[in-house]
Image (cartoon, rainbow, N blue to C red; front, side, top):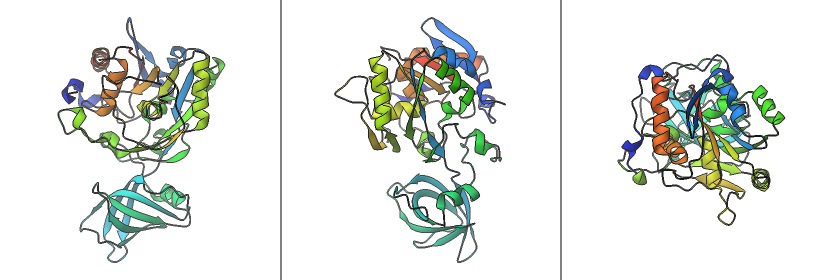
Length: 352
């Protein structure tokens, strides 16, 4: 489908530079069959039917921007961790693919220092990134100590200490993301308790959000777009939760497009509406015409024009209906993107 089908005009001042004062105080646009309703995020609890299954993304954002010095010369190098390249669980050594900014090209074997971290340039990757090896007594702890929060490029300010909390969901558990699953940023412990009082079940998927989520679409047709890979895990426990929801006739509610991609990537071809346990990479690109197999309802932030994420939401809710909602959001001065407001919608059975 042509990328310009997902374009809209967004005044720059509507791009949120700060989160709402409290997570639940963001605005919420509810997209219904009969029209649109302006609300606030705390009221999404009332939109989720009793007994539903709500699936959140438990990825944890890594403070991925590292400022290092060349051991040989003392020259400054910025290392932006993009994606974990190994999963062997060694606390003292990790390999990552990274973007590197330096005044002179790094040579293979070059060693950098970033506080307690020793960073060695291993090789170039086929995608043009650097493979680097990080060493410390505890690499994850060292990254947390010296790294900066990787705020998206459209947030035009330096990260502050409070971003370490606000650019992380309350479900964050598994380190590996370099961008937040932003719909989950709105949920609070009080909202989760309110859902539990409505007999709503909460389950967790993992999708480590990569920089590809901000990758511009540089082709005219989405069919030609090289979709980025992201690592996901759909556990046996989550598969069982979805099976129980199907048995009781309850909808599956995704908190964010990352959860949609994870669940739809793990859809069970043999059982409609179910998933199979899966751990690995996904390159699933969802656009209008896609037949959703698992997710029934979606809480999501507002996404960039001409993006794969907006294409996913249009596929889910119907292109005309979603773009009409976006126009309303612009006219009503909703706040857009990662620190912005949210919308809630149900799956359009005949999306186009």
